[in-house]
Length: 112
Image (cartoon, rainbow, N blue to C red):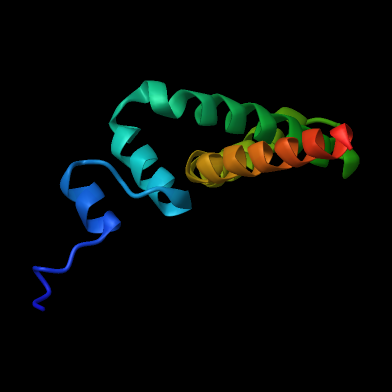
């Protein structure tokens, strides 16, 4: 049987413009939709807010709440946010699925 005669779900799904299921398929689908700002907006806002708060707390806990705090805070944030945004955007599919599994298990456990 030739390589062209063999078919798989993965090959067929990509041929029809739909990624295969699973974590990789969800990430591929997310990347395909990434042309739209609307698909990036939740990860953009969440990563910006979280890194803003975390860098402020880290700067304050280091005891540097003096002159120049705002400048050091913004420098830390501008270093952390470009790293956090792609991670939040690409890991979003995995995190949502993990949350669904955990909550389903918690509901099953509470019924017993």
